[in-house]
Image (cartoon, rainbow, N blue to C red; front, side, top):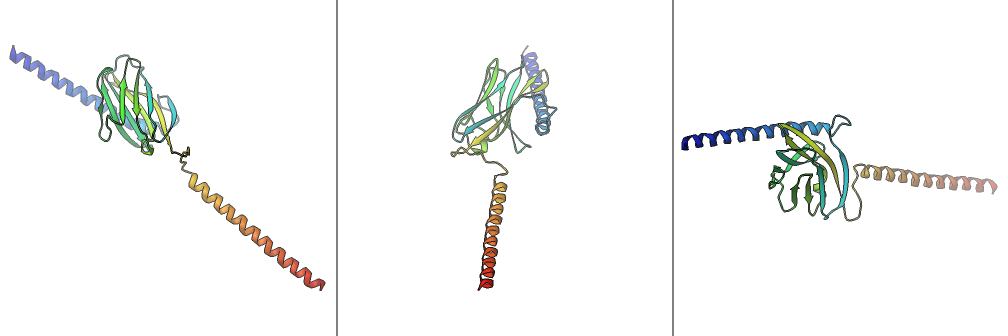
Length: 201
C-alpha cells in the first residue's frame, strides 16, 4: 500500500510538472504574439484603454475575467513596444500571488475574485509607464484580457511627448529667422533713407 501511494504521488508530481511546463510554453508563445499584435491595428482579441495618473499616486488596473474556469492568471507589462516583463501570477481564483523577478509585493498588489483581476501599483513613477495586460490559462489555452496604457504625469501636469524637443527646435529656428529678417529690413530701410537724404542735399 505504501509503495502504491508513493507511486501515485510521483505520478501526480510528474503531471503537475508537465502542466506547469505547458502553461509556461503557452504564455511564452502568447507574449511573443502579443508584442507583435500590440503594434498592429487588427488581429488582437483585447480591449485597450488609457489611464493617466500623477507621479507618486496609486493606481489600480482592472481586468475583466471572462473565463469560467481558469487555472492561472498573470499580469504583464510591455515597454517600448517589445520589452515584455512578467509582473505576477496567481494559481486558481483564490490563490496567493507570486511575483516575478524585479517586482515585489510592496509596490505591486495583485488580487483576484470570481469576476475580475486587479493590479494595484503604489507610488508610481516614470518607470511604471507602459502597456499592462492580463492573461488567463484555461483548458490548455491562453486567453489575453484587457490591455491598459498607463501614462505617468510629472508634478507640473505635463506629459512628456517624443516630439516636444523637435517642436522646440523648429520654433527656435523660425524665431531666429524672424529676428534676422526683421534686422535685415531695418538695415535696408536705413540704407534707403540715407540714399534719399543724400540725393536731396
